[in-house]
Length: 91
Image 1 (cartoon, helix red, strand yellow):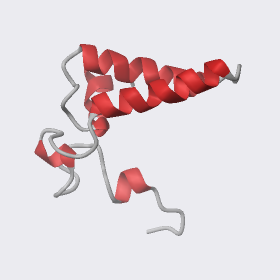
Image 2 (image 1 turned 120 degrees about the vertical axis):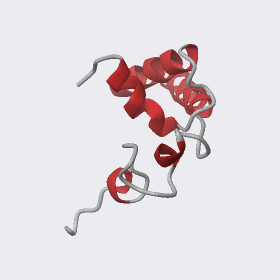
Image 3 (image 1 turned 30 degrees about the horizontal axis):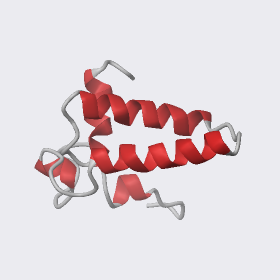
Image 4 (image 1 turned 90 degrees about the vertical axis):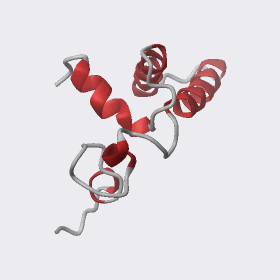
């Protein structure tokens, strides 16, 4: 336990088998969909482009979630990015 909490680790862990009651424990079903995440990241990207504001990590995240949608992850929770990146060999 530490004073610095990490929401993705202690509340919504994306690693299957670590927590019960989260999408990763249910084949990433439920939760906030990957398609919705890609849509929202697209809105952020469009705003950044229109204001000429570079968002390199946001752009990369948008690319990743678009690839996930194209690869069959559209209906899975956004935390399935963990599984997607493992399957892609990203370490």
